[in-house]
Amino acid sequence: MTFDFSPGAQIPRTDGAPNTAVTAALSSGAYRNGSFEPLVGINEATTHKPGRYKLFAPDFGEAFSQAVLARTLGATRKPLVRSFGIEPRIVVEHCLEAQELRHQRNKQLTLVTLVFGLLFLPGTLLWLAAFEFRRRSDTGRQSWVGGVALGVAALIAILLAWRPFLTGFGGLYVRVVMLMPIVGWFLAQRICLRSTTQLRERWEALIDGGAVGPMVPGAVPIGPEDTKAEQLRKNLTALVAEQETNYLHYAGRKGILGLGPRWGSWQMAEQLDPREGVVEFRPFHPWDVVRKIEERLNRMTRSGVATGGIPSVKVEHWVVQPVGENADEIGRPSGPEMDGSRMRPSAVTDVANRQQFGRGPRHYLGAQFVLWDGHLVVTLMITVTVLSDTLRIEVTGHALGPLPGAFTGKPKAPQKSVAKTGKFWEETTKNLPIVTNQEVVRLAVRAPFTWSPSMLNWLGGTLKLPEPFGLRSAWTDRPWGNRFMADDALRVATPVLRAVHAATMDVLIDHDVDTDRFKNRSLMLGAEVQGVRPSKSDDYDA
Image (cartoon, rainbow, N blue to C red; front, side):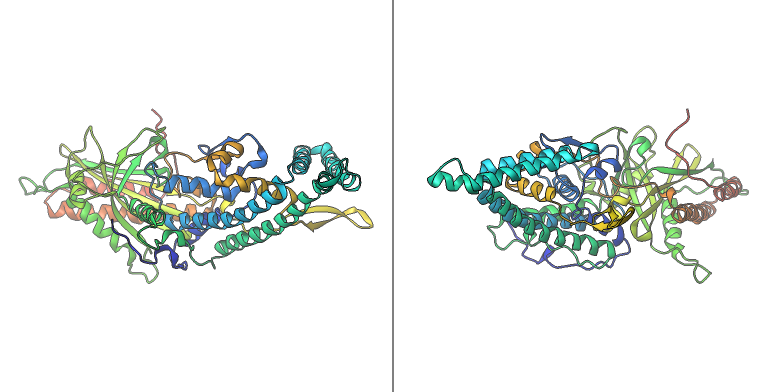
């Protein structure tokens, strides 16, 4: 076995790529607090398996980190959908860092819980019962009942401290059995406040764009015997390699997984006839047309107008395999045509040149635009097919929208409206502590069980991610909610379509093909694309 002792993930990385905003927003999910319920509402396929006791339920950051790490770094995980517009490794490393910060907090809380909770278990159970009763009644008109429950527990503590019903050592124990959990709560509150402040600082820095890269020393082996760190390093490396795949999947109305739904489609299909004065046209392959289109698309960054070039266009060859719309897993072939998760260029060329009629997979040439710091990913997919003497050029538009507000908001201090002193008819806003008493109890109770994740999941519940899972496509919103994003998606379709037509004409002319029909069809499509509107192209009305 060989080991790589390079610093790896231990070196902080600053954000400098154009798509870092959405990467940072997703990464901030690992540090967020509050309820995890917004995670379930983003994607209808995301579900929550409730636990036995709500007191043990995870918060947003805990549920997000645990679910993402289990899905991306698990020992027997399924293949992942490729994530466009983000750096998946950075998101996973932030989850690892947040998990490590919580692990350090839980070690301290576990010690406090064992000393001040387990050793004084009768008093601890009474206080927990009072807090749980308050949590369940802390809504509506019965909210005062919770305060009464805590008041009763406090009264019991005073009575036992004043008049214990035992003597000797037992009497001393009875005096403090209700008081020591209060001391433990005070220490736990300080630990939780320090940890929460640290997590919220990282959360805010990520949203503001001033955060350095994640620090994951656990991914750097310190010697040949450090097999755990070596395995983590290999898993992170495999994650990056898998995200560079050129083998995608089409899933019915979901569109091509990872690229978002298909919102537009334009086709040009005409007969191949020799031009006038030529007996027959010179033969060519579909790959010849594809290569010419690729050349034209790469030239879109330049324009005769000083500011007319389209920035950051990425042209890439993809092979797309169909899967069921409700499939919960994707797969990739293995064999001599594959190089890890990528199909070799020679195999991609063979797929493009073969007559893919009645079989798959299919070849597509993609022109992708990562816009708005990664919040919008527009992809135009071009496929070239020849069936009998008919050449068909098809261009389809796909759009992956921005992240929802659950990932883009900054941390805010909890507030509530209260009546003004002396002017009860007016209200003012009062800041609340960032860590409530209920949150301190929850974290302190959960801490000892974090050493047994399966038991904690049984007690507090787990979050099930949508399948097939992609870090970017699992949590996304419709781009048509933002007028500027919608305009950019619609505008870029026209120059791409015209570049495809111009490249096709060049190939046909070079091979002595009559282009009159193609020119007429090109003019018709040029007029059609100027009035394009987003539609559900994969919802066939048959």
